[in-house]
Length: 470
Ligand SMILES: *Cc1c(COP(=O)(O)O)cnc(C)c1O
Image (cartoon, rainbow, N blue to C red; front, side, top):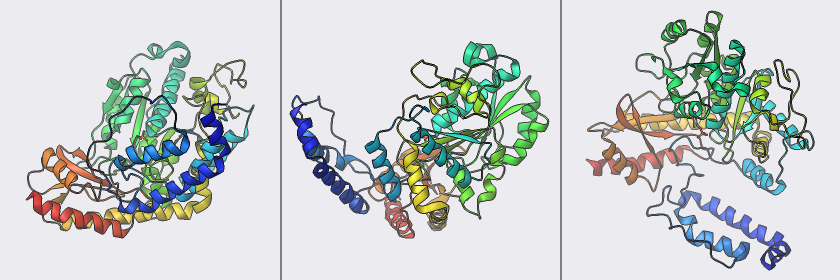
């Protein structure tokens, strides 16, 4: 064994204790760190010849890199839709690496069984029935892509072909109808060989990002054959929700696969006051939910649900003599049976991603996660009210859930908004967007640590920055 490896192995408990102390100090100091540090990150250097051991690597990481990394784990990183990591999720993630499982077959079954238990808990959180099978993937983009891949196979089933076996050309032109689809839908369509051009935008309701269901029905009536509808449950700009029940009811008259992108919107189900927003979610054929956002587990984690695990196994089937028996090809495969995970997702090998979610769900329960959701919503409401009350700012949409979309009252150019975001960047991280052709900023609340105090700090940072911006 290399001497550095041997020495680290001998000192393992001590070195892990040092790493743990380092992590604890980082988390304790999170509130005092700049949310977005100024200055450039270090320039990459070639790998130095001699190794320096774990202790040396930790010291070098701390000196060279740590200071330039953002406070994205903290309570005022409100850019994109960024969750934090609950204490239990953090411990779960540490153990994920510690145990280093790659359980995706019944030859070594415990890990995949733990994932199944976790999926059942998630299903209960989102009010889904047992008909929704679930698997964990690396993020909502991958979850949407998997959902669309199953939809693609369903289209094949309708037409009597299998894109998984015969290629996408067997399908001819595919149409995917959606109101305000997330950018990852187009990316998924590109990956799947359906093409970004397959996406057909449907009119949204006036002043809203929710699809106009009557317009959707008119578009469906124009389709020559079966198609795919992507419904949105929580859009990134204004957290608008399509009427899922009304869309699902259109299947009585039109033939389509219903995929719902509920990346963070699904968490509305945890709050009795907001659960109506995702009414009908269970009627979907496939559903995307991110876990590294509002569940507050570390990256990379999301779940994808689908009612047609048989089609999913047809797409992702991975046959090799050394793996577990695969579900046979052909119609009706694996219906009712539980295929091994190796046959259900784009990855073969993968970490025991479910463990962090398992830990946080078991530690805090539904009620704990409901409290996170409701506190985030209250924070967004409070910031929304403050923004509406500031002379220099203007709310662009009502705060429906956890995002505040706002702009400058005067001359809202991209440059002026970027300058404002930079001016407050030590205290709060906001990201730019364009909503209804108006450049804007978004503040998205999804970190379990964020409190009223943080909202006050954000407002206290915005006020002088606005005065300076003039
Ligand atoms: C964040 C998000 C995605 C993409 O999620 P990743 O985890 O970044 O892949 C997709 N859809 C919606 C609605 C989102 O908010």
